[in-house]
Length: 441
Image (tube, rainbow, N blue to C red; front, top):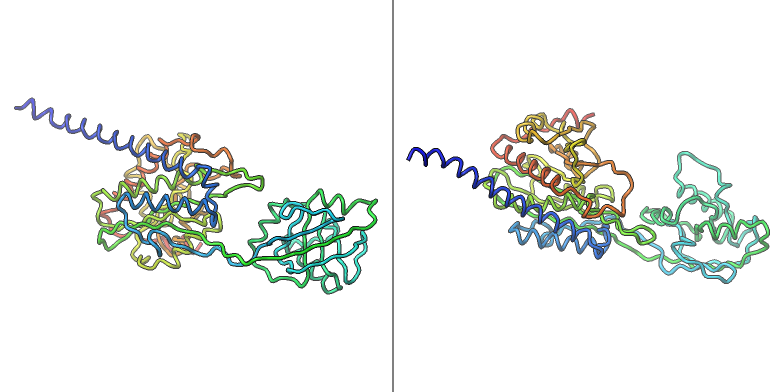
């Protein structure tokens, strides 16, 4: 009997380790499945307000429902919010010497343009009343206090007061993508049409041998309302405190030449980990906190989704939130950088908690630079302690090569398990105190 008694701990340990490895394999497989779908071509980079975002939201909702997590949005799991309301060019035409130019590429109606028509025979370097003016951008007086678009608006207002029927800006150094991005800005329309033209058209208008140009333009706009969608799930443990775990699932969509930015690391990696944490926490014995799972959209639109949630969190009392954890770019872990954690100064309790659960073979690097620029910032501004997990937040420009096969899934699992252990460690602790001193800096 004595021999059997000594063997029991070894048998139990072996069984536990075997079960843990099986659970890890399942989690790894699920992470790969989630990331692969979120980066698939049909989602087209998951840009906020685009069809790919809606497909992603539907997938996230179905995954949470399968896990048994309760919906906590305005419409099931979904919480819709407004990014912007305004207008955008609609069926604009511009003919130069009877040649039709391509709207959006060779010419772009500026966001402050009037929706009107104008035509005339235009002489180079001759700006006369009741005719279209050609304005050479290289000759515009610079103003360090104004953006490029504001300079164009200033020149348009001057031309309108002088009797111009429309203005065309040529020799601008902006790309069509940059000028198209100005459509997001809300600005009062001018009284005359205003158009920007590309480099190839600028060469025609600026040709020293040009005599006159026959120009016929029709500028029109349509009303638009761009919305985003947060996906919100809830694990109701009937507890007095709540933990919020979030990750943004939106990305940058497509480039002007229709190159898709898949966004595997940024941030399908964090979103996939969010889904797996929801699954694990739903079946966990950690019952002293309710758990809110939020997949944010609109992060690439100035944290619009998380800002909206913190202002419209009906049904979730933010005063009872213990802390918020944000997962943003966690698919590129290596031993040199380690797991980087921001928000550490938002509560004096964080270093001790993290230090007590972090594995000895996992390098943890604390980022004390401040609250950061990801979605946890919206909660930090509400005096809620936050943590921000990332593995390579400074990649620079978006990459078409940020694809699922480039991720370190074992590293993502490491981050996921660290977050889970932090939640487990705090389950029986008192509510964390927000470090108000950091918020005042």
